[in-house]
Image 1 (cartoon, helix red, strand yellow):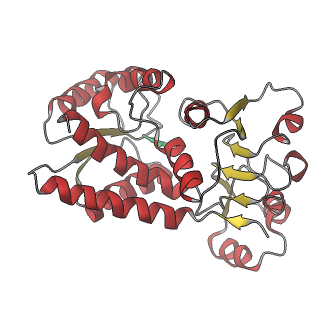
Image 2: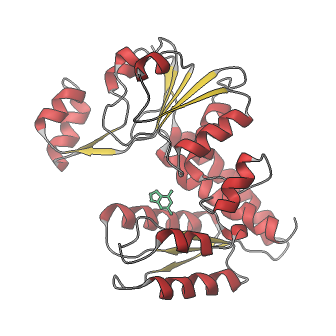
Amino acid sequence: MPRILDGVAIAKAIKQEVAEEVKALAAKGIRPGLAAVLVGHAPASEIYVRSKVQTCADLGIFSELITPPDTVITEEMLDLVASLNDRDDIDGILIQLPLPPQVDTKALLDAVSPSKDVDGFHPVNAGRLQAGRPALAPCTPAGIIEILKRSGIPIAGQHAVVVGRSDIVGKPAAMLLLHQNATVTICHSKTRDLGAVTRQADILVAAIGRPGFITREMVKPGATLIDVGINRITTREEFDRYFAGNANREASFAKRGSTIVGDVDPKAFELAGAYTPVPGGVGPLTIAMLMANTVRAAKLRRGL
Ligand code: GUN
């Protein structure tokens, strides 16, 4: 039986450690602060941001939710970011993506002070990360490393194959795995004979954004599968493809009319040595690492 890597439990442990750090900082008169900027009413974004703000409250981190109108333009957003960069009570600035099309997302992310860039999206932090200098690293990739380390899964010398080359997950995940001395291969939509590469993986990171993309034939038996995908499926046909015979899923699908599948076909998990489930695997780590980054930014900015 493969081992299930419990992201909820690992995230809880990290949040407890962060709460201890927040307490220690409070004794020095320091309260880390996060500004969360949300434009629009995309349900997923609203859920994420609400959860981020709630977690700040749980851990004793100050937070401020800023919701500019849907019609906001780039210049107004740049002014907002400039004011947040200047505020001493704000250590982290999180701009929830995606932004509406009239806003220049790159210009905005570039305007966030690298010292307050708790998402690790600024090119300065991306550059520091690849150069092996201290940097605020993107939360989901940092969470992947925490899952592996805290589960005692060796990384050094292992062949890690990352499928997906996004700036937010694939590229930084590859860099962090490399810094842990993995042998790293990055695959993407143009990779020839993808299965031949993924079958070499001791650690396979699936960050493609397509439901059930990694199938059984693409997995080496005993590999560790890290599934970053969050794909909502709504049709009976898709449901049956991934979850036929799964009573728990059946009940929640019947109730909600949808369920979530990762980028790994659940049938491929059966072959794994260990895997992160969806939901309850990588997802919970993203917010935990955001909290950790906020406290880290608070300390770094004060030279602690
Ligand atoms: N949208 C989806 N994931 C993320 C994330 O990790 N950070 C931000 N800011 N926006 C997102």
